[in-house]
Length: 135
Image (cartoon, rainbow, N blue to C red; front, side, top):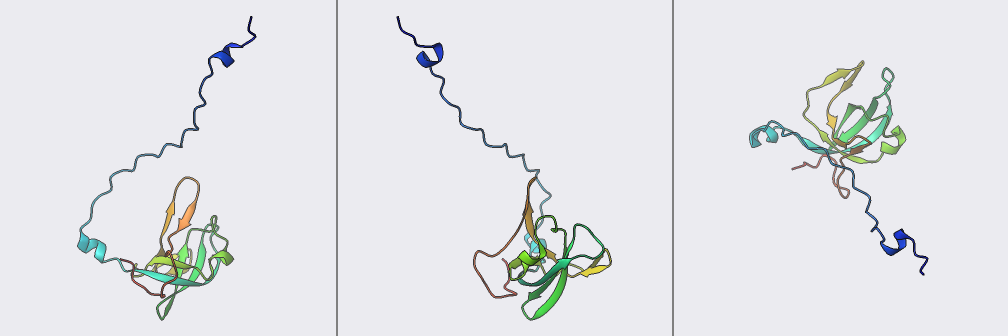
């Protein structure tokens, strides 16, 4: 008589770990090409980054876009230490109307992607001239 246990005689194949389900993306309102073309997306070099003096989640970035230097206020403090941003190239909306955020003027907006776990800055694949147009 054999001493084979039921699990040995009829093995159950291992099931692969299920990939996390991607939530469906809501269909956004559409815009025309002319509306999109109004955005001035540019590559900016981060010259300085520091904590916002009046906000817990904001950083102040001094960026150079071509020959112009400007300040951008960004809500990325929980995801990036200020020193890690200096020297990076990022994508910004260069023609966004200036806004006062907790007493500091912001003259643009950086672009980032986010999910439930992290925020990731959009950056060029390789170095390119500051001020280069994103198309």
